[in-house]
Length: 63
Image (cartoon, rainbow, N blue to C red; front, side, top):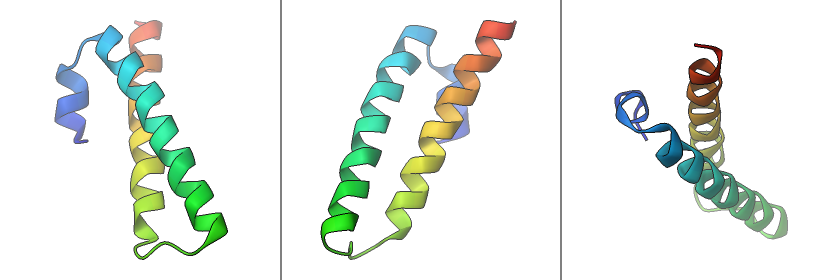
């Protein structure tokens, strides 16, 4: 998910996407622990997506 998409999304939409992104990240992490992923860079990508969404939500709470 690109930063521009995150900035344009509503707060409720971001909260839903955060829950979904955390689930996807944990699923990838568990799958990688059991047997190595074909593309382990996906772990980094999903972790950073979770961080981007969480940062935007925190920024909106502060404002």
